[in-house]
Length: 112
Image 1 (cartoon, rainbow, N blue to C red):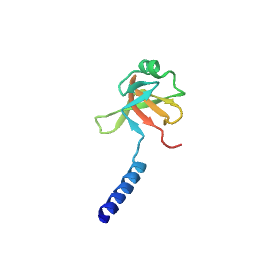
Image 2: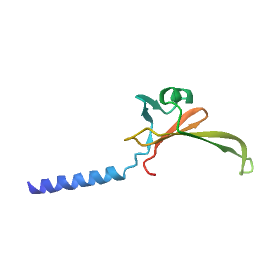
Image 3: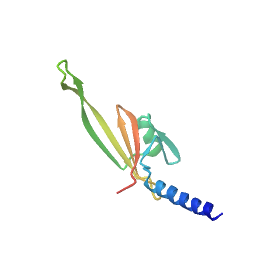
Image 4: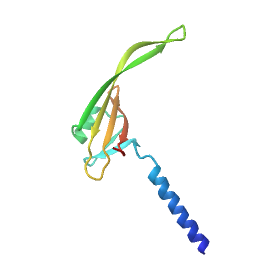
């Protein structure tokens, strides 16, 4: 019987350590203001559900294509928007990344 208790204790320790190390920074959906926001939504839908973000940042990235000679050349640009929401006490802040006018990813900021 004591071997079972030792095993259960060890398993509990291993599970607790795994939970502490496991990344909790990526999500496909997010709750804000009692509404669910999910990847694929457009900015207007998110503002309607969550309000304006605390911060907005826009970055322009190049688009590259292969040349017949095997190199690459820039063929255009696209913009990436990152919105930061401070979701209040007890909730990790969230960074929403938009590409081509749609929510591409949700990241929970677990570390300062």
